[in-house]
Length: 138
Ligand SMILES: [Zn+2]
Image (cartoon, rainbow, N blue to C red):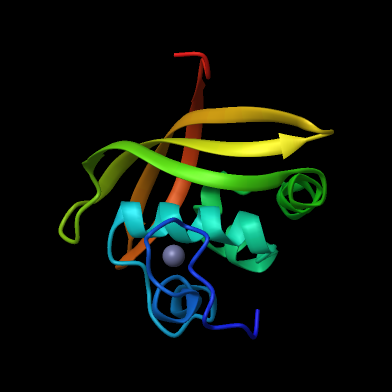
């Protein structure tokens, strides 16, 4: 993660150093649900497990959350992100949703994870609440 020239994995088109890095380092906070979602996707790609745990709504953190994120990171190679649509999630909203498709390779098989994620803003910080997985063939 020392290579700041690389494009950010969240598909923003920006360099990682100018995009999700400051969120991962805690230097700044994702201002919108979409920014949080992108930075979480990026964290999945590069293994920022702490960030994934910290940006999950505290009340929604299961006991094995860290292990679950870790095993996902260890077993899945994420290769792309496509944001389908967003609902609320702005700087003055309390809740928001982001529908996205994330493309990955697992055990040599290329697949798509299609999800509608729910987010909540608490004390000025956006958190991931949960996600509904959609049929990836749609
Ligand atoms: Zn990014």
